[in-house]
Length: 302
Image 1 (tube, helix red, strand yellow):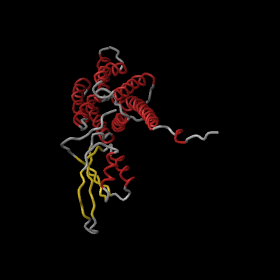
Image 2 (image 1 turned 90 degrees about the horizontal axis):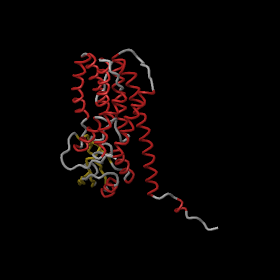
Image 3 (image 1 turned 180 degrees about the vertical axis):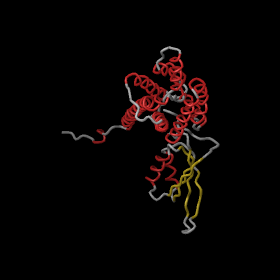
Image 4 (image 1 turned 45 degrees about the vertical axis):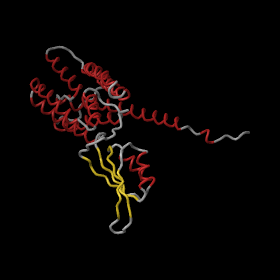
């Protein structure tokens, strides 16, 4: 019997890459489903008891539903979410990423569906607790969708498009734009409800900024005796420039090299892990980068 070559039985690099993409897609879809279910839960458990509206297109759909209900015209929030988001998805399809738009469309479609088939009852009656837990929970669901490679639709399309162009997050500016809607909401339903909604959105925005840091930048410094090995490991993970600086140890008098680069905080864990794999004795120092001027490679949204 002819012996088989074990190398031929191993999957090729292309097959492994396909498998990783399939696993990544399944994980992303799971996160999108959880995001949609979480938003449905927050809307029914925390927002409805306090007469709150969120920001973005979902907030506009809620606002429309409340205004039309006052004059006796039935309007479904679920339908409003779809009607407002579909044109935005079409606009973003060629401008951002097909995968991003697909995941986003699944997310806001599931929210519309879940609002019709699920009914969650409020947990507490206290407004402060509802706003606190609701705002943080709402931000978490949005960050979850963003980390999956999608979004919750609406203004997220615009925010991601502009953020990609500017290489910085603009979600705090989206909050300011939402405040205009809250002013109109205050005129219609009272300033107490509008104020609570602004506080809710503020907590949500802070949660997103804390959990989703795609556009934040850090300066990383590697102190090593083998800069070439560190640089090679660095470039296999990301596409940024690196400066190599000669240094001398003050105590030992030995010659060292400081390899310094500005990278995305998203890339930091992989970069450090890869460099330490080739140089276990490397000293790693990271610094927060508030502003960076010049050419900076931003990995495109898939």
